[in-house]
Image (cartoon, rainbow, N blue to C red):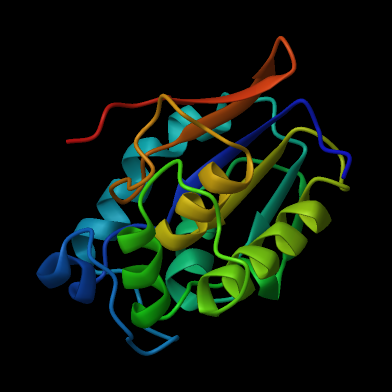
Length: 182
């Protein structure tokens, strides 16, 4: 699998569901919009995103990610691509991933493996486009990317609207938050 040397990631802004559930995942309607806090989070990071050398923006098809993308990329005149494979996992998958723990090998089969394979395909599609790419998606997708790329020194679970830079150094992938979580 051939990837770009760097890309960026944003978890969508807060929804009413996130406000209650925090970082924990749960099944909720696909078309849930951002709440006012989530829209404010997206507006707050828009200047950070506008300053990045992004050439392509790839996004989950879910409304909360699409709405975040529209706000944070309002000044970027680049290619936008919706990728179904970047949609969020189910609550059952999230809990299974969390119980597997960070840095543990993936299970050979089951819902976690299926989700990881789906995200891997989505990321492959995103990183075939002009670089560097910004991916706007979900907390479960961020977790999966960290697992797939073997990220070790970085929180796999992130809050809403925290920009993350994924990059290679000495042939190994790393991740760094561009804004500290509040």
